[in-house]
Image 1 (cartoon, rainbow, N blue to C red):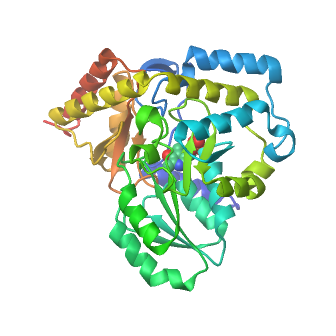
Image 2 (image 1 turned 45 degrees about the vertical axis):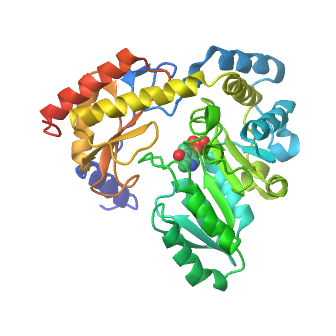
Image 3 (image 1 turned 90 degrees about the vertical axis):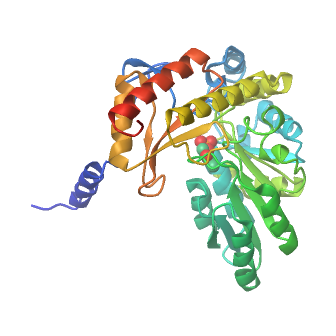
Length: 394
Ligand SMILES: *Cc1c(COP(=O)(O)O)cnc(C)c1O
C-alpha cells in the first residue's frame, strides 16, 4: 500500500545512493583543537571556532556571572522586554570595535540576513546577488519579494552589466555579496564592487560571517581589511564563528540601524539571545581589543597548513583565508575520505551538493588558533596517508 509519506523515503534513499546523505555526528565535549565525536577523541578540523573562544575561560566566566545576575532565558523579544543593558553595551562596543556608526544584533547571522534584507527592499525592488552567496542571503532575498538577479562570482563587470540592464525597471537596488565565501575561502573584491555601487548609487551590503574576528586589524572584519569605513552601507557579521558564542551583527549607518530596530522582523518576533550569550560576546570583544595574538596565530596556522598541504600535492582551491578546502570532486570520494580521516583520528567533514556544486565535493578544513603545530602535524600525516590510499595524491 502506498502512503502520503512514501516520497520522503524515496528521496532519502536517493540521497544515500548518491553519497549525499548527511550522517550527523554527535559532539560530547567542549569545542577545541580536540573534541569527542560519537564517543571518540579526535583532532577537530571542522569548527568555525577560529580563535578558540568557544571554550575560553574569560567567556565562560562572563556567561556565568551574567547567568547569576540575569538568569538563563530572555523571556521576551528584543522590542518588548528582551533588551538588557548587556545587549545595549554589546551593540555599542561592537560599533566602536568595527568603526561603524551603529550596530544592531540579532539571534544569529542567518536571522540578521533575513531581517536586514527584507526590511530594506520589497517587491518593487531588485537585488544583485553574487552567484555563490550564502543560503541565508538567498532566503532573506526571497523573503523580501524583490527580484533577484545573480551576477558572476566576484565579478564587478558582471555586476555592472546586470545593473545597466535591469535597474531602471525597479524602485531601488541592493547589491549583496558574501565577504569571505564559506566553502572556498576566497574574499569578495569589495573595492571593485563598491565602485559600481557608487556609480549607480545603490545600497551595498556585505555578509562578513567568516571575516568577523578573522579579517582586518585584530579581527575587525572585511570593511576594516579593505579600509572602506563608511563605504559599505550594511555589514552583516556573526558572533557564532570567530567570536565563539552566538548572534548576528548588522553594522552600518545610524539611520539603517534605527530602521532595523523598527522593522527587522526576527528582532521583533523572535526572542532575544540570552544575557549570558551577550556577556560572553562582550568578553570576546574585550579579548580582541586587548591583543591581536589570537588572530595572528590563526593566520600563522592557516598559512603553514595550506603550504604543507600544497607540498603534499593536494588542491586547496582558491582560498585566501583560514578556510581550507581540499578539492576532491565526487561526493562519494569526499565521504570516503572523511570516513578514513576519522579512522585516523581526524574530524574533517565532507561537503558536497547542495552546499557546493555537483562534482566539486571536498573536505573543508577549518584552521583555528586553538591548534598547535603538533595538531597540524597530525592532521597533515593523516591527510597524506588517506590521500595516498585513495589515489588523490602520489
Ligand atoms: C555561517 C554564515 C551565516 C550564518 O551565521 P549564523 O550566526 O551561524 O546563523 C550567514 N552568512 C554566512 C556567509 C555564513 O557563512
